[in-house]
Length: 209
Image (cartoon, one colour):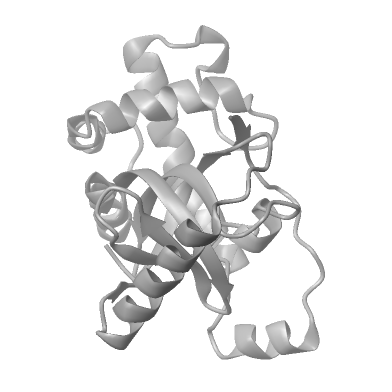
């Protein structure tokens, strides 16, 4: 398994530009992405300093150039005990206004585990929980899941942590997928397809957490 973090944005097609203008996109807007990292990086910094995971990363302010393996260690510590989020908010480590506090606090509703990325839609990608077959529509942060998994056969099994961001679902920026680019069996692929179609038919797609 290998960690993946996409940081490149491809040129949008005319249709993608049209959808973006209508508020429909597979990724956050630039302003939303900036807001996410503005809130996310200080939280990771707090967790890192609290548990002294990597002293070389004390004082993180930007996602650019951060070592993915070390960031994954920090994020795993965070998700192992989400009560640290309340501690962070109450500590005053970083001043947060009411909206920012609400966003950060909502991350306690994170969903962590294994997922099947079944397909890509214009407003996000379909992730199906391996544990309970719940179906989530998940946006990328600055790059879409289509780009993140480019070259991987679909459907694809991944491990990820889904988090709310306003009225949409994103992830914490780190996923793992099979380094051998294993293709799921035809039976498993058909099963994930039916799970998605049934959830869509019954109005059980999760667009928010």
